[in-house]
Image (cartoon, rainbow, N blue to C red; front, side, top):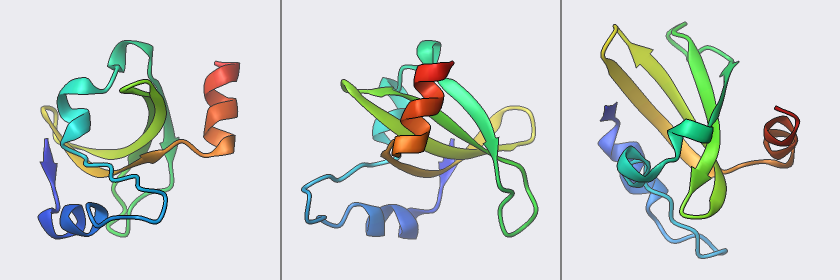
Length: 92
């Protein structure tokens, strides 16, 4: 897994709701066995991106990622799942 350290540092800044989600937290604790993965808009470079909607520490989260070759993944973001993403997950 690779990530943009500058973007990661920005994401770790305290938010008003007190939520600080770190893409590295999802590396080992994201529940991939019950995750819904759906394609999303391509990145600025045209590379395919996907949203993984799944559980992390008892909360439904959305993790955006892009495959790099066959064995690497670029972790783009980790955030609480939106209402639409929650509905997608529930319907799956």
